[in-house]
Image (tube, rainbow, N blue to C red):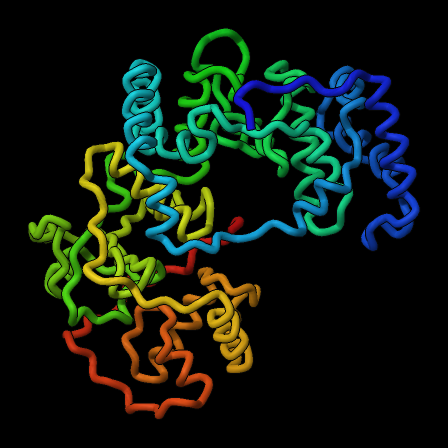
Length: 436
């Protein structure tokens, strides 16, 4: 992918593509369309945009770019979730070079970062981490025409209502003069700019930080910084002055059933259970509600997730991505590199996880998709079965759990909790899943 927006085909070629694409697809529109083809759908969408306040001028400018592309729909239906384990993904995405780049960009745009932190309360390292992960600071924003992607996904039935709204938001971006239709180039899913905003986020949270009268998240570093801070603070409810994620040490006898993003305890309680900072210093003896996050179970890395970590799971609900983003931000802010596990963490193969998911479904649990990937819903179900079988309930699937569920291993009586268990007074719902 390239950092610079590419120009779309000339209008005569675009018109040809419209005829080819729409005439073919109009014969077999999605079931939600009840026989209505793309041209009729597009006419209605343009009417809805007008009712939403988009000018006829902006609609006319965008019209040649509102082309159906079956390839975008195919890509949406075939998208894959993260299949790597956390240490592999974080090792690649939160590598030292990206940490160093983050620090360099904080220095390069020191004034904009300082302004954003003062106005929105979001630390520079948090903004820089998302900036690096989403586009390598503008180097990889995508090279597909945004309007074509959005209107194709709007016509498809899978997430039609969502993408109709996103298409109208993109037209609003054009209408207010932030970007022209031909400038709107990004990811296949219609996300725009150096921190990959959906058009609705662009409309609601983009700010003009360089003072040129436009909110340009493709080319203006200051606009990217201010807009990302506004989204994190306003849209994701960032809590000014509070931490987000830090690596910790956990004892071997921790009550594992208390480790989960949906369970919160004061730091003082974790300290009583033997949890310390990564360097061995005792945790603060206060009432700040926190969760212990074990992305790879009790033998892998351990983190203390603060209330601000919810902003990460809202940005992207993949636990691997959100933990990596929080970890990278902590590294940019000066934290030490994550300690490697003392021994390889046991893990099931893709096929074994898929089999385990099938067994969990048969046992009455909702795992989301049976796809061989350990998502949030699968982890909840794994933990429930670990509790049932008296295994350490760290939400990490093991060969022993799989054997128990297959019926090939004896079921032991539930083991007693190895540490005193405080009442779980501060339990909160799981984070809302946005995408894997």
